[in-house]
Amino acid sequence: MKLLLCRNCWDVVKLQKETRSCKCGESGGRYTDNLNAEYWGADETYIIGLDNRSLIRAIQNEGFPDPYGVYSGRNNINAWVVIEDHAGTCHRIPLPPRSPDG
Image 1: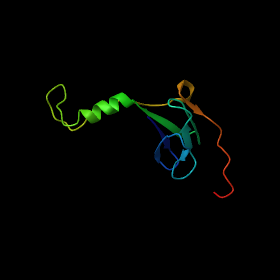
Image 2: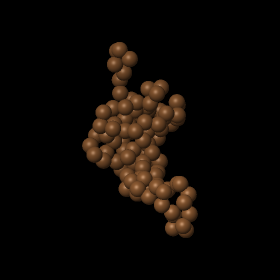
Image 3: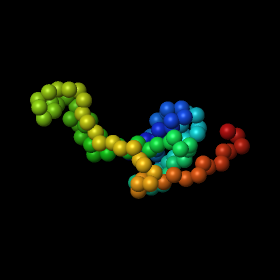
Image 4: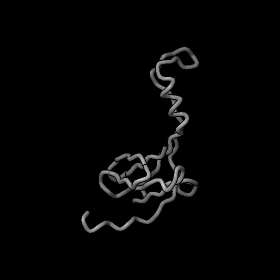
């Protein structure tokens, strides 16, 4: 799962097949297929990647003890911030033109 973080308004948006934008409209993006995404915005726009398998595992393990027998109520997931030069499945594109109606 890929999330877009706009540091202009600090909004976090889940990327989907349809184009989505942050609250202030300065950043946005979309999936181009089931794996790859394109996004735009100021230099302060980031993609946060969540490992789907670790997220599902954390949800399924809710209420079970960790390896030390402690019910912490928290489960870890793997996540990362996409660094543009090493993105692989995320590609920054130029800011698309705004439509005349907004």
